[in-house]
Length: 210
Image (cartoon, rainbow, N blue to C red; front, side, top):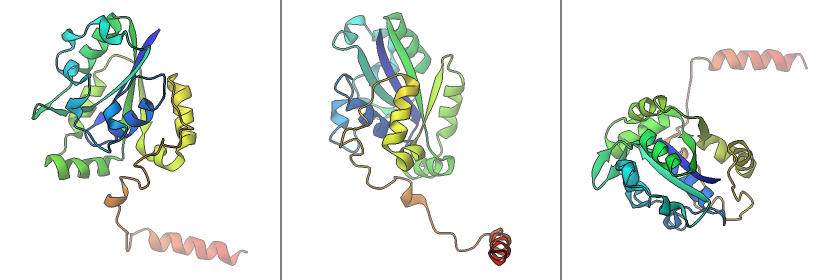
């Protein structure tokens, strides 16, 4: 059976990162432009226009392969306008064409995701995405950006098995552009926290028992 992996997440959650990783598998028809570029505007993805008007989709779109992957942020910029993708309509239309849709929602730390949105979109759009995802009537798989950077290939191997979709986790280029976590620029050293003294006292007592 033909499958399409739909990767979606709040704007700035790491959709492109996961899309690049899944598109590397030789049996998967993905977004070629993202393979050699850190970032490409979402509305340049082949499927972007169908998230605006799913009724345009036809069966011949899926003749070239049995496995497809696409990613879409929620909301996303289409022709310069902030647009909410018609996710459920897209899923329904795709499956009516005989293609099984696997939905993967990208998860990033809420505070960091919010700061990223405020920096680039001048406001938090996270709530729009959460509302849209809560209304989806299909099985959802949650893919963690933090888990990817912490466990790398081991995490990807697990993800591939759980969602039953091929992923070339042994590819030497699997972490291309990923030398540093995108969260790092938002993380600041904490000089002092109210719980520090309690924790330090606990450690001192523990050390005294050795």
